[in-house]
Image (cartoon, rainbow, N blue to C red; front, side):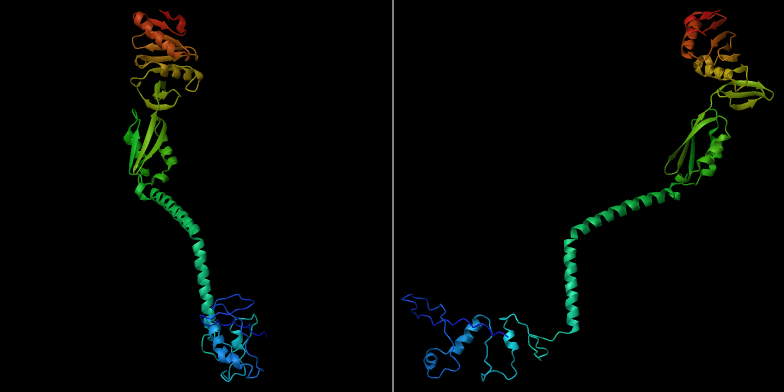
Length: 361
């Protein structure tokens, strides 16, 4: 065990000066090395120094100036009987460690208990968590913003889907648009089973099956108009004439689809006299020619006859005939026929099968 380093010498009283190493003067505040008296020195040798200044008070005063507790010799009569070497190590002058055990000191060095150790560890963990939270605050804020945004979007999506499939957006009204010959009320009655159905759950196959029973329906489209309206847009078939059969007169369109059957020729529709039947190319050519006619001329036609696809003939209500030919260049033929009828209204017939060389009979 090392002995503690000697204390610096005390300062001399103010106002005194000394000379050392020549005639150099130093301030009275400059410390001067003063060797302590040896233990084996005689009282006579140490008499002079003890008469000038007592050394022990100076040592104690200097030690208090530096914050060091005074060192009491072992053989000093003022040293307590229970003092030990641990007092010297408490000064911190040496790097040696000493395990004093339980000395019974109840002053500054209180005895540690497991509860104290546990409390210190808990405080250390709390401090560590506070530091971690402080350094990750920005990241946690960014994560919180993302979580809140995604939660709002998810809530909106789920709310919209839930509302769409709820009775809030159910069908309460069916509107039929585009019918002229077809009864719109009959179509609404056929689609009455869709009332009360949410908009996303509308059964299109059931609607198709209901509209197939109406021959005049050529095509249709559905439009949902929230919150409660379903719009059905219908494109009707255009009749081109009536075909005489065993059951009467059947009204057909250009594709040969039977629209209705009556015992008498339907008013306002021409009679079709076509060889080859409703599925032949001749019937298709006759249907195209009739649909290409102007509206005023179409109303005058009473009979459409054809033996071949390029030999379509029209019979007007006043008995005049028009040889139209094939369905090609129907626009030019209609313009040429209108000019000829304006110039020669008394003619019995017109041939516009070749619009560049039309013939008037």
